[in-house]
Length: 364
Ligand SMILES: *Cc1c(COP(=O)(O)O)cnc(C)c1O
Image (cartoon, rainbow, N blue to C red; front, side, top):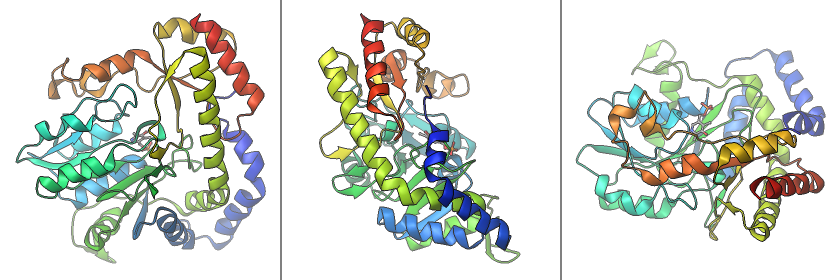
């Protein structure tokens, strides 16, 4: 059993992926070829965003969007400690300080009621993460940002491309939405890739320049940038996968719903889903006591699991000096309890039944 079955997905989409790749190999425009602009137009249309700027990874998307905002030394960015390292890492890389706000234990997303108290004159952005594929409380976050002089809001949507929020799409809910096409994300390529979404013309232009070493025209370096392009082949692969993506999102929602219903009957608690939004279930995550034991028993039963994430960022050696150890107790609690189960659109019902019954006996 695979935790995420990318080979099965390739089997299902092979003719279209192969044809798309062949086309790129034939035209030979490996950097900034026509598939890059084609993908950007399609992704912008999908999310409803005015601009999409593809880039080399989700990490780079976060970095470039903060560079476009001019974030640097002395600035603070409010974020969550219960996320993949890239979120806080890019803030620190720019010389700014991540200000960690605790999470809600039921969704594992940032607790919006705690944000306002952390705003200072140095706050230059708020960066919620739409964890496990479920969008954070973006309207409330945007309202707080607006009340404090329109602080830019960057959604780390690396796990939530395709998710709905009150009838709108993740990535198009704030100043910036940043996603990742890492192979295991809901919309993945076959290497590294990512995208930035914004409705702001000035910020979009800045991101496009930053992506190519700050060039506003060939060999005219208007600003300091980096080499942050997504390559043409990866864009071609995402274009092929996009054709099947709505079906895959539907399957993820369906499988997530089946997991929810079955685990509820078994009395096993899972990350809860809010009624006004649809998760894309980048992960299906349960909360268990004695996780090591449960994981060990599932492993014996041939069921792969993963932990996202075992250590909150404020307790990681690289970031520990930035935050007191006990100021985000719910993140610490979640880190001890979370365990993700196999989740991908090609998971069939009998496999799902095997997983849930093995889990039931593992926790018994
Ligand atoms: C995957 C991920 C990233 C980084 O994306 P890459 O494409 O791997 O660089 C950033 N934030 C979160 C929450 C992620 O899950």
